[in-house]
Image 1 (spheres, rainbow, N blue to C red):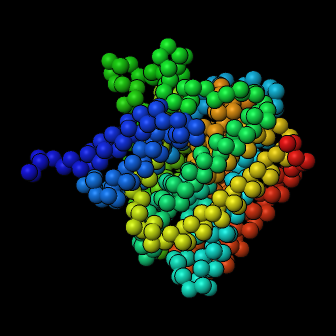
Image 2: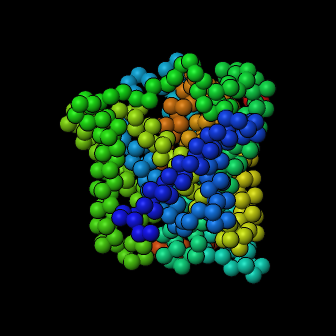
Image 3: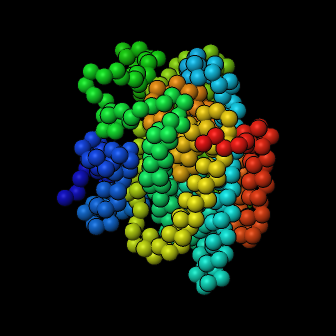
Length: 457
């Protein structure tokens, strides 16, 4: 039967929604998922991946890659639009521990260490596989920093752009590395958190993980956090509609900006520019926010609702990300993926734990937050933090937000370098060499900040 309108995109979205609802139910009922605080969106993603790879769902993987790509961009636009609440964010903790900038800078330097180390090791393993006769696309190993430290959005964005340069199934490989990173964040991070709580390492000394956090559903009658505030009169337009309209407006501006950049750059770089769409989108969002502030109308943006938009898009991003993984491709590259993933886990865990217990204050909170961030996303890091600091009484949550600003030059530099093999045909040894200064500078800054002392536990 031919339908009067195309239903496929909304049916695909509806299918992800069904799996998410099932994931919420499973998280609320199954102790295993509660123990490791596995988010419902991850459960939903793996259910979707099984359904897609067994042929139960009548969709192509590309449909879910498309959703993941666009949800990723929406999340970055919303992050760019979100401004800090006046006077909010852990003020009590700031009085006890000083300015949050120092902690933010430490976490930013840790991210500089992980992104550079992962890139160096990933490139080295590609060269090593070549010595033993397994030829991989030059940027294969660069999915380590993209999938682990940067997350599924960047891995997908650059993966799709690299496919245009001849890297077959790059998107699936990138999403696989990102999925491995999330598994590490929870199956390694949560046991470390529990160990730290038993030893009394958190500043707030939590005694147990709250039941609502484990089940993932707020109990009836419990205090509920506000989602946001109305900035529009509902008789005119719903506030949520206005907030989403801002996102859509910036999306269109970014699209035309990207088209313009494509026309003025070389063909090699032009093919990869849409992999940077998320970056351009956030810059455009910051610009719009700046203009609205100058015009005196920034009060129309509600940070609470924008955070909900960010969270909504990230949840569906993760569902789509894992659903889109094609197991036939993973099996084809299972050996290099497995070897690089194990190496990635080791070179991520040990520097963070080693340096984390050598900072002066809030070492466990900062360590676990940046661990979750460098294996999943910022949301994952904040989830681990919430287990040991349920009410965000310490300033670490605020530091995490500031970290995204401080780390920007490092991440921007690395994102350019990971594209060097396809843009300028750099050999991998040169990409390795270019990441070494990022690693050295990050280590030196930590030392200069005097946040590398004797171990505290």
